[in-house]
Length: 265
Image (cartoon, rainbow, N blue to C red; front, side, top):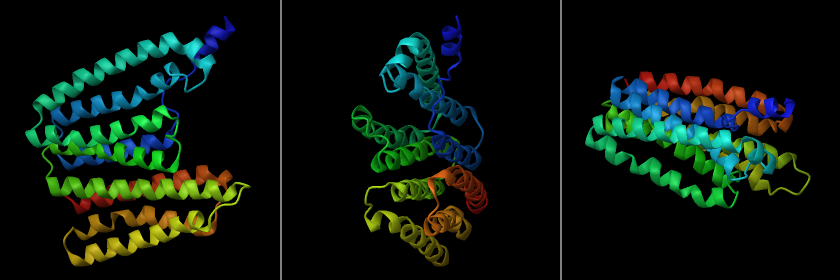
């Protein structure tokens, strides 16, 4: 009885906490850029349902171990079927109500998501390439949502690129911190690349803002996260402080969100 209760108490929510921010901030941006109508809201419901189905799939595929599959298999199967049904119904309804541009744009997140399949099958989604691709794929979910709400293509693309760069910098910085702490030899480029990329991102953002092709505040929206990544990269933070780094990046993401919404308004 105790084992059964413990099994039932285990969460089937995704364990990759960073992915919540990588999905949540772009979707909040998308909803804020457009009109809060049925189409974008339904698309968000469908996207979140697909995101939540990841953990049941991991359990059923053995990705969480044989014991989890034995003890939670039935519950994971029921949860997965329910979430897929919600995703199909909400997604189909949202696309039906959305304009053609939003429907066509779903190709982007679908293609990026499909590109993750080989890495998932090979259990390589935790590599730098895998985590980077995940961050871009999650960011891209905002594109059809924003367009479904009536946001302009230019504003939508700018917001997507900003979030993709922001999350890539965060991912690369965290991976470099972990690599630095390993006892095996780490190539110097793996340690010094994140600060260089962060500095380059800041310089490019400022140059774009000065050029005037993109609203200045939106162009420099990446600066808070890029600056945080630069500082943490230069300081050589120990992995025990990754939680602090994570919360610092989340705080910087709030500034990114505010800059995008004001700059693209």
